[in-house]
Image (tube, rainbow, N blue to C red):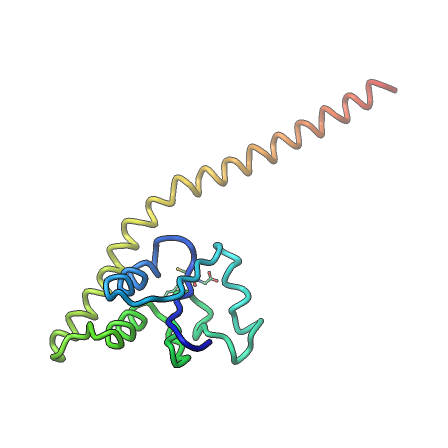
Length: 150
Ligand SMILES: N[C@@H](CCC(=O)N[C@@H](CS)C(=O)NCC(=O)O)C(=O)O
């Protein structure tokens, strides 16, 4: 890849979202690659691309800079993009504060967002259970109906 910034992340507004927001805040154009969860990551993994994989740890988000450098881990992505677009704090103390804010924002997101997913996960499991039961009942009735025709 050459020429521009690229962010690989799932289509959800979760871990990679703060990197998207940073690009927007800096008015820096980037290719916002939104992958389907969970399989969209597969073509980018080492098992498929070998050493050419842009995913250091086979995880998202992953940022690629215009010179082709790949960076993983959201805090490192934020630091890398922030420094590259001129948003880096000048002093070591401010820099450490920026990193602390980045890491803590992850904790806040984790504590809020994943709880919101619980109802959707429960609904998905119930739907699967209901469909399985329904198909068993339909199968049972089909056998009964077939039997009664004999
Ligand atoms: N500590 C990592 C966590 C990255 C992570 O867990 N990413 C998840 C998606 S949010 C992932 O890529 N999982 C691998 C997979 O789904 O195959 C970070 O800050 O970037």
